[in-house]
Every structure is written in C-alpha cells, then in structure tokens.
Image (cartoon, rainbow, N blue to C red; front, side, top):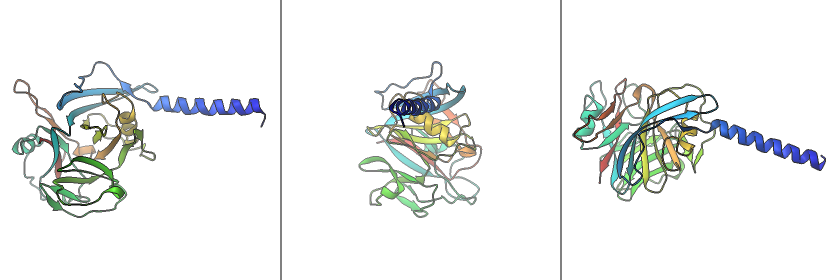
Length: 266
C-alpha cells in the first residue's frame, strides 16, 4: 500500500473510532441536583443525555463514602409476605439512611447466588454467567470484585452475587446487551472511597447504562472505575432519608423483592 494511502486509511480508522466513541458518550442534561463531593452522604437526581440521538436517562442517586458508611443486605425472607411491607419501613427498621433493591431471586423468592445478611449465609455461591461480580462489606471496607477474584473469608457481614459488570477500569464492559430496555438498579465506585447506588426512572439497556456510567460527569461528579448491575425492571426501588423538613425520596418496586442493599453508618 502506498504511504499516502496508508496514512489516509489510518486517519479514517482513527476518525471512525473517535466518532463512534463520541456517539456513545453521555452528558449532563440541564441543571441537576448536584452532589457535594466532600459530603459523606448526599442525594441527587440527575439526568444524562446522549447527543447523537437525544435519548435521556434520569436516576435517583445516593452518594456515600466508605469511610463513614458500610453496606448491609436486608433480607426480606422467602414467602408471599415480606419481613417489611415497604422499602421505607425496612430501611427505617434497620436504621439505614438509604438503599435500593438488591439481588436477583427465583419465583419462590430464593436468592440467585450467595447472599449474606448480618453475617448469615443464604443460598450458595454460584457460577452462573449472569453473576459476574460480588459486592460485599467486611471490617476492611466495601469491595466490588469479579467473581473469579473473590476470596471467601470470615468477617463478611453483607454480600450479594450479582451482575453483569457494567464498567471496569473506567471503561464500559464489552458485550453488554443492547436490547430489552427497562429501569435499572446499580452500584458504582471510583475505587478511592466514593460510592453511589442508583435507580433509574427511565428505561434503558445494559449497554446504555454502562456507557452512561463510563461517561465523565454524566451521572457522577467523579470518574467511575467500576460498576455492576443489580436486579432491575419491576424490582427497581430506591430510598433516601432526607432531613426532618423534607419527605424521603422513595421509589417503590412494582413487585415483591427478596432483599435490599442498604447504606448504614459505621
């Protein structure tokens, strides 16, 4: 190939890659309730837009730091009647400031994969493709790791097997589904002590969610290093207990769920 033609071909490849990447980027839409990055706990409702087609996603977000908060899995037990009638009742009963619905479950409400609530193990560790990661708390902090890198040990107080992974090393994970848009629930971190749990009020695909979280400042004021999907669709729920002068932010799931992922003070 002549040198000039070779350079032209390389330029074309570069521009194609750049344009496809720009098309996938999401940006903040309008004036959102923004998070104080110095706060240990904060609520925000943010909307992101994809400039290429104008698609928008809105999410309730609870930002927190691992230095001040831990995760807790609230088990609502199996059976037709949950341990608590609403998300608000469950989080208030456990003294937790915020939370979302948790992991996947079978029609009989048994968890899919391992769940640990207050140190009690429910079900067993599974290697199903969907359950690509593990989110858990122990005396060393909060951890989000790939299933293959998880090392079981004593002292884990809260754990959920879930998936798929959405963002890894700051990039959207390849192969995420670009079909079946629905409401989504997720947890993400910058891996520097900042975390966020969120629930979307808009329907979007897993690929869209991964791209949104990996786009700088679209939903979070810091770079997302890793993020993972929780049970979504009709299970999507969110709670944030604001100050005494304002009502809590509540998004109730459309169906009964097995467990919740809560933010509780250390």
